[in-house]
Length: 268
Figure 1 (tube, one colour):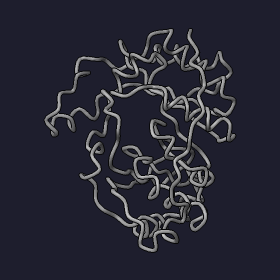
Figure 2 (cartoon, rainbow, N blue to C red; figure 1 turned 60 degrees about the vertical axis):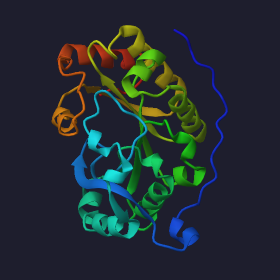
Figure 3 (tube, rainbow, N blue to C red; figure 1 turned 90 degrees about the vertical axis):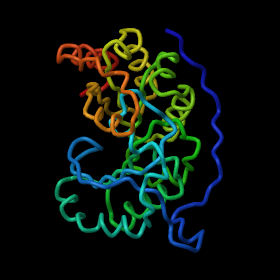
């Protein structure tokens, strides 16, 4: 197994949150939707804001309608916070919080930072950032201070497979993972098991070894590939190239999870 060398990551200077105090105008972003979820987007029941825009084009994406920022609804942070406020008592009782997801939330770092800051300090919620890490350089240290948990998608360890799955290189995600480790940031790694694509034993082993080396990964979600988003691809007139790919069997998922467990990680 080849271990990629670490490289220093420069952080792009951006407006610190709360952004409204800096910009002197209402902070707005492109929002696809928001929803309440349980056990999927972080611990407990959570208010999840899905932002529009993503630099990746994952072959198995179940929300390709979030890829283009212009397809989202221009929404103020005030409106999102007002909606989340309706559920804070329920969320607190359920031991949950708020998650900013996408798309890729770091495509809109100022808006994302504003939401996380206000969710944490104004509403008192546990906060999570759901990201591929590809744009991790856009996350300022100030933004990350308002994040209690990062849900980090590592699509593949093999670089060629990663490029095939996402259309982008792997390196920025690994750099961001190292930076999160240096900061002591709590991380859940997410890995989608796709038969014939990401399930090669060496690939699973590579992701597991890398996650274990970081020292700050408290959980790994080994997620089964599914085709629930295929209708969205069809609606967009885009070919869903994994149409004939089966979902992994329970035994295949258990085998993959065992690899992560063998490295001392909590895999579910």
